[in-house]
Structure formats: structure tokens, C-alpha cells
Image (cartoon, rainbow, N blue to C red; front, side, top):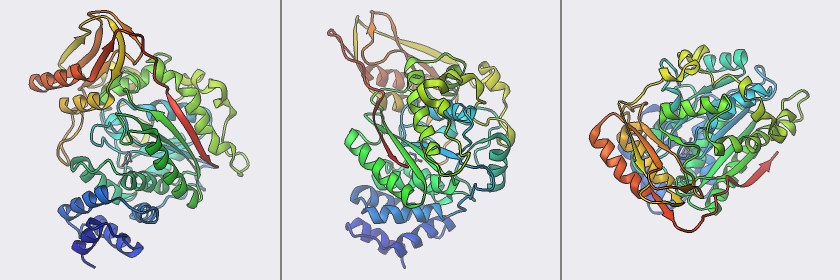
Length: 438
Ligand code: URA
């Protein structure tokens, strides 16, 4: 086979065979196909799309590019979660410790920032020394010892996703239903959890703008997981405005710690009972005796137990400096902090999540080119939500920067990201739907 033929067939809208997809992903993984051909193929997939069968083949080929973990000898029933990507989405950092505190082991494989959206691994790497490339052995040992592990794609686990992901981030090929579905599901299948909870975002700060598109993505991923024998739950949640207030790596870690200590923004806290129920669902329906699915999640008890959980495994095999978790003032901090104030009184009609995500990226929280270093300290804190009343001079955003030119560009983007209205505005919902295959 030739990479040029596979690229051309996808460019022309043809359906790739299972063999072609397996061959291509193998070539990505072993380096036989260079980045420029992979990038061309990604753009062809992005523009032409894939049939369901091709997406399933892609997810399976990517999952099998490394090991598929078998957790049966390690824990009775493990749950994993994944978000389809959003702005200010630090849900993992808050929900994982709560789920673990309720007795459900969590083995999770996360990703980095993609486009305007943040990535859990980049956030966790705000904690000095944190390692996101655990070997299979280290992943399993951390899960067994601490009941919680959070790592990224590695040479052992879903390496093809790691390679495609880094290229997609810098070639504007993120927003593609088959590429998102196969990327997420390859990691979930490789990490071996029995139950998988998907948080599929819809809105301006998501890759799926409309709820209907988010539902299509959710159904596709549920089908892939169900056919692979996993119990699946998908939440469809709003991403028209940033989730919580903080957007940017260390700022989000600090906010997650605040929530776990009983504070933090109301929308993050208010979503916890619903998220807790979603995480309990796959375990509750498990046929395994003693498999976790703690009813403690019901009725928001998980939120009440928030103090009980350890922060996602900053320490242990992951090697992070847990003093930064105990004392978040030790996290990286920006040198310039400026506020954007409301020019007039009014009701907040729009806080455009994508514009806030791009402003944070402009400040240095995300990558322009593959392998670019990121600045963990910078980002934006959004002080209001759609529906809030503000007075003239109230803070709308606080910008954390390390570079004056980047600060100016971010401020100009942020001042266009918000709209005030004279008439009252209804708040946005947190969730639209929950789908299950359990
Ligand atoms: N998260 C992933 O892991 N992959 C995507 O493509 C989008 C979100």
C-alpha cells in the first residue's frame, strides 16, 4: 500500500477498508508515514468525514496501536471518564477524587489541549514534577495502590492517538466527528475501564456547536464502547460559556482544589450530583458482585464528601509535588494581572467560551506548533455567567499574563467575547441529556 493512495481515496470521499485503516495507523505509530502525509490525511478525513464502520476501525486500530489493559486482576470494576473538549473544563480534576472517595476505582487516560480547548494533562503538569507518560506497569501499580490513576498516551498506551492528537492540534483538524470519536474511544478502550462516562459538550466552546451534533458524537462513541463490551454513559452538557471561572492550566488546578475544599464557582459545584449519578450508573448495573456503583453518589452526597478524595494522583508514581496541592499559592503564577471591567450596567447575554479559550491560548496556555512549550501560569478568570446582573465597573475578566503584547491581544479578544443586554436574560442549562448503554 502507499500512503498517497490512502490519502487520495479519502480526499475523493471514498470509504477506506479495514486493512487500509490498520495499515495507515500502523505506519503512523512506527513512524513509517511522515507527519506531512499524516496531516494531509487528517485534513481529508476532516473535510470528507467517515462512515460509521471506518470510525469503528479507526478507534480499534488506534486502541491496538499499544497495549489494551486488562484491569480484572487489579480492581473489580473501574470507571473512566472523558470530555469531548471545552473551555474551563476542569471536571476531571474535581469528579475523579469524588468518585474515588465513594469507592469506585478510576483509571483514566487524558489528553492535552486541543485547539482552543484545554487538556487535563497540561493542567496537571502545572504541578511540578507531574508525569503524564506512565508505563503500563506504573499505571497499573498506581491504580492498585491508590485506586486512582490519570495518565496520557504513551509508547505503551494508545501511541497512535498521541501522534495524531499532536498533529490535529496544530493543523486545524480537531473538529471532526470521526477523529474525535476514535481519539477518545481509543484511549478509553486501551485504559481498560469497565464503565466509561463521556461528557459530550455542545456550544461555542465545544467542537460540536449544536446539541444534535453532540448527540450524534455521543451515540457513535457509545456504540463503539458497547460493541467492545464496556458499559457506557454519555452526558450532553452545555459549553456556550466557560465552565467555572478559571481558564488556563494552573488557574484551573487552583479552582478545582477550591471546589474540593467546598468553595469554587456555583456551576461547577451544582453539576456535581448529576455527574456523580452518571459515574455511579455503569457500576450499579454491573453484574460483578461487589462491583462499585455507590449509591452514595445519589442525591448529591458525592458533593458533600468532596473533602474525602485525594486530588487526582498528583503524587505516587506520577511524581507531582503535592505541596502545590496543599498550598495552591505554590502553583505557577503570572507576573501581570489585569482586570477588564463592565463598561455599563446590564445583564450578561453572552460570554463566548471559544473566544475566552482562544484568549487563554494567545496568552500562552496552548500550542501554536507541535511540541511548543506552554505557559502554565497564564489564563483568564471569567467573573460572570449568562443571566448575571452587572454594574458599570464590575470586573468581567481577570487576565493573567507574562507578556505585554500577548496581554493586549487577549484583552481585545475578551472585550469582544461578552455582550450585555438591558433586559434580563435567562441562565443557560448545565446539561441537555444523558444517554446510556449499560
Ligand atoms: N478529547 C480527545 O481525547 N480527543 C479529541 O479529539 C477531542 C477531545
